[in-house]
Amino acid sequence: MKINGAEYKTIWFDEEKQVVKIIDQTKLPHKFIIKELSSVKDAINAIKTMEVRGAPLIGGTAAFGLVLAIKENNSLDFIKKSSEELVASRPTAINLQWAVHRMNNKLSFVEPGDLFNRALNEAKEICKEDEGFCESIGKNGLNIIEDIYNKKKDTVNILTHCNAGWLATIDWGTATSPIYHAHKKGIPIHVWVDETRPRNQGANLTSYELNEEEIPNTIIADNTGGILMQRGEVDMCIVGTDRTLSNGDVCNKIGTYLKALAAYDNNIPFYVALPSSTIDWNIKDSKKIPIEKRNSEELSHIEGIDENNQIKKVLIYPNKSKTMNLAFDVTPAKYITNLITEKGICGASYSGLKELFKK
Image 1 (cartoon, helix red, strand yellow):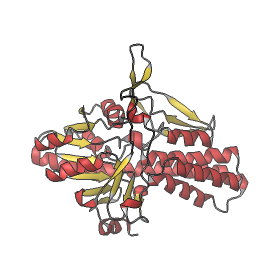
Image 2 (spheres, helix red, strand yellow):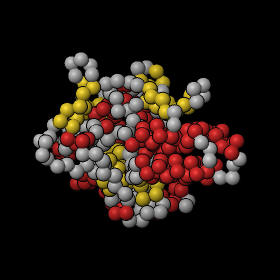
Image 3 (spheres, rainbow, N blue to C red):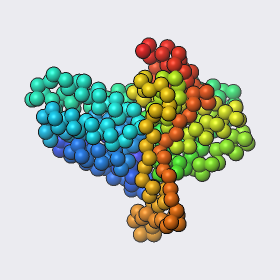
Image 4 (spheres, rainbow, N blue to C red):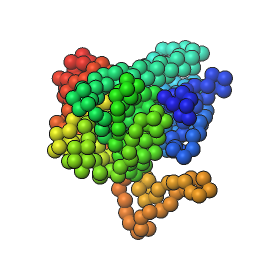
């Protein structure tokens, strides 16, 4: 997708410099910075600090992280250690674990001299595959938006939470892909963008990328969605997911569950868009999903740009106040209208997913 009129992916390998390049998302929307990752430690740090974020993108970053590890030291012990550290860098998103396991399986029984090229090719394939998945999600989800427009004959108002846009994937996004496809088809769209505290990924990233594609959008406080639904100003909700269980339960950015409850109470369809790499076929009980607890400073401080065009962090809470910063919550399948995947649309259930993916 575009930034300042130029086409970008969120991550790519620079063949000449032999480094991985990313868009540093901690600096958006105020500054656009391309950062180089030259070691597996750089990749781990980029994931931990959320310079890259979004389940598909951190999976791609982990894959390239193993490429950098092999470039540094292609011993099996170092690759194993690097794999473990990458998986531990953010525990909730299943794509991270999936990508590392896929890379290791691909590298099994490969001669040391061939490891780097084999790893690089597989990391590129993972990213190319994700891009294709997200494009297909968009084409499948387009039908939903088109149906609403054909009935309404007016602008389709869509509410989304956090950033499940192209900045969270390699390109297109998951929740935003149907929006982009509808926009390209000429369907009038307006997006309600949840601010998404505490890191403001909705305000900082989703609104930013929608602006770049000239899609009308309005940033709202996280608790505004309910009254908009009551007023009939939301036609549908669509979000992404960091881990989807085979029973249809969805683990996504904190606050998603409350949006689903409000949508359910107001008979607003609530869709979840995901690539198959986000499905966890092993965990059966959502209480067993590891929910990441992040630094309290993300709540107690906020970043913005000052009059000198410098990014500054300021304290917004009383010094003595305690905080709890859980990054994700779980939305039970019963509140989800349907899942939108690269293979089609299905019910949020084991039977629905099994029919699509034939596991």
